[in-house]
Length: 191
Length: 417
Image (cartoon, rainbow over all chains, first blue to last red):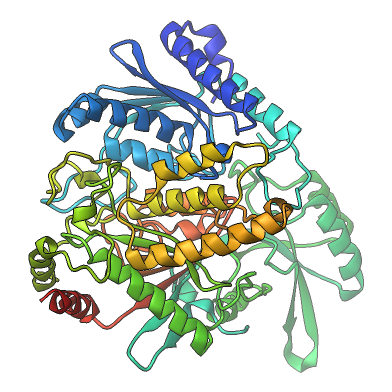
């Protein structure tokens, strides 16, 4: 991933949405959370956003993507949408997230059937969209038997404003993770 | 400690078995991956110097299990030493790549080099190691874990494991259809920390009348479905979310799909419940009590078993009393996520759930039925073997007598009658 790409190619739309995701990540940082944020886009509009809440909730699965998905599920059910209608809506949604979705979130995004994902920096420890596993494609996985709903693929593009995403993570790990188990390891920037 | 881990299994008198699922799929010892290295015979008197220099100029990165020196016995009782100079191909796969320092060393000692094979990965079993040493000697460290019971379960431990798995099976069958269940246990106190069934088709609003999660259900409306489910024990278990993660559109809800969530698999909800318990037992100092109470209401398990709630209430009560006695409790005894806890699944979790319990720092995972569709702990993926992750749990399959699912259901049904 060439970090210079975003400077030279005017990817105005993806950069604009990624900036909004980065704002969410900054909110997380301000709350002493691992700074990862995201927005979900449908028809050129931001319809949901989320940021990490793992420390606050003491639930390490409350990643930005899960937060943003839950906002939509709650809203759409309140609106009385059926499961089929919700699935159709998700299939028209694009996610912008500052860090490559982890294995759990990549699986979740496939389960809900998202259309497309743009991420900032790669996640070389838990990445589920190419770094560790490739859950956004069917190629590495078993073909499903007939009669069972097929796993869903989504398009995935990384490296959008990666350096900004990394800078946020670095500032978090430099200030120390207050949620880490004691005794603390010596904290070093790891991205 | 010398036995290979994949042989670790404990069998009970009733036909229950605990089988360790290793981090690597078993490979035949003679089919291990190899890499080519450049080697040379050396004079024994130069061995120390050469090895010291090589360790400096050409360390064997990624091959730490491979011994640098090989000693072979020649005819007449004499022995010959060989040394690995470097990898036969460079980082770019360039087969002619030999570091200049190594070439210089070879010239100095007039070494005549040859290419040979060594095993690429450290042996995980004694059998693999013995086979490796036929190529080139390696070191073998039997896997060690900071986990009690990995190399064998005491009778007491295994009976606790069987009982918690029975509880999970019971939960999985307690609703209107067979689903997956997850039970998080603190093995040091042998207490259930949190549990849940799949809630893809029934979440948010607690519905007391569905009685999902209750082992001793006496709700008549659910009984016929339970019997039906037990009669169709061989069905595809279409409501088991981890078996069909993409099936949330097709799954039929018995109670009307007025609330549903495609990601609320049993493990996700159980983690949520355990986090809610954590926040309740160990409130952040300065946080208003109202907040944590309300918080807990929102996250409280809608279909929790009566039995489990009783256990939980007792724990809560005791620990809250302790908390009032000693304000320092928060910092000193507050658990970090689910560190040290075990989780029991009826079905092997899907990749989403398997990663969720990595994040939550679960120590050991037990499951009964493999998940050929999306199982992440041996069937399709093997997450416990992904070394890049920041946390690793040990995985065990608890195989139980085939008829358990059926008999448990019939027991429930007969109580209802």
